[in-house]
Image (cartoon, helix red, strand yellow):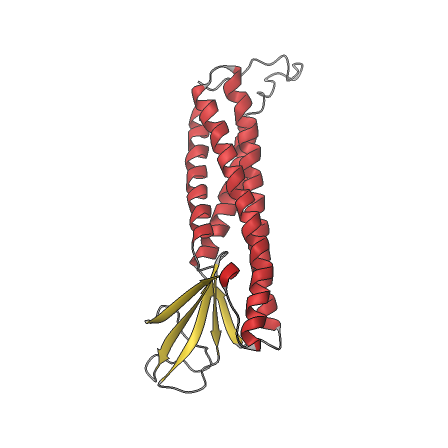
Amino acid sequence: MHKRTKIRIAVFVLLVGMACMFTAVVTDHWAVLSPKVEKLNQTCEAAHFGLWRLCKKHIYISSENYVQGHGCGPISLPGDENCTYFGHFTPGQDTEIFEYKTQKEYNISAAAISIFSLAFMILGSLCLMGSCTGGGAGRDYLLKPAGMFFAFAGLCAFISLEVMRQSVKRMIESEDTIWIEYYYAWSFACACTGFVLLFLTGIALLVLSMPQMPRNPWETCMDAEPDQVE
């Protein structure tokens, strides 16, 4: 396969990875938390959250949609939803204070790291655009920082994922929590996909920008003919 074709495939995969990461950052379905259902034919309060907001949903649980041993939900059931940004949330009861402080401490870190990921994606995109408009050796030269920036974006996405996972783990394992059940939702899956695509494709782009390996054993990398992207 020609080098130019490989780079085009890498750019397409990077676009998919950036779309997944951007979707994860702006949505609120990283994790879903469910409390214990005390009584049937009453409303219970489930929650889902992302990097910026905590959303609580009042769901009516009847005997038809209740599953024995499971918590409130599923979150897809209809109900009134109230979303609050972490920076403007005023806690009330002790349990809510614990939830808020736990989420705010971790989510500020995860959100800040995700911003770094977006910044690296922007820098990588600028290098790719410069590579497309440039020519000759300058085109290959700009592919190197582009690959590094996208790989760094993937690493930041991974760190943000781990911080969020620790946040959920701390809430579930605490004695003060009301949540008995949790699962990671589609925003978390988007972030995982973005991490894999950005990191691996960034490394691949970096490898593609390297000088051509010598064809003969007596050649050095400097002696080999340059393999420019047309």
